Image (cartoon, rainbow, N blue to C red; front, side):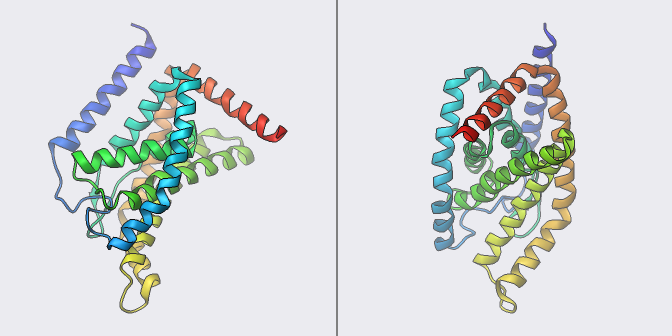
Length: 260
């Protein structure tokens, strides 16, 4: 058996074991992204409306990638599985929500933020249906924070850091760590807008939510950054051809954009 197949089997087993730990030892129902029915109706609708255009654009991006380069489907699946497993490892935090890794930064760096919008949204949908983690009414809000804001932040932080420092591993660490933190800043804003404090309003409410989140989220974000580097090292060892193909696609896209 080749090293590439051995590595893929090992990573798959790790994902299965992690998934079993998540499903086999259920947490209380309050341990969620933003739980089902927690947001007022007007805010639930608002975030759905904001998230849908990104999802539609993401579908176009994902379709283009799979049709033009079908050999990348396995890597796409890996990116989705990585997001599913990490974001399912939840730690109860603010009432009605939780802290957990997001796992979206890796896919955003590999395939771009729009593609990760679809993968992240599908992960959130499956978690809402299978793990009672999140909800359908709050799916738009959760998708905006984790599958839209986080991946876009990761993509731009990674590219800017590589451009100015040339350090790929540092760029990857900063991208995934800061994207994780931004996800929960957005979540704190969403909760603050929906539940302003009687004294101090939205700002006071945001400070309370963000302050509580920070206790668990900062170490989780750092841990996610370090874990993503380990996975990146594995990809460089066993999926070198796919990474080279992705880099070639990015260079060709940038060249076409500069010409146009």
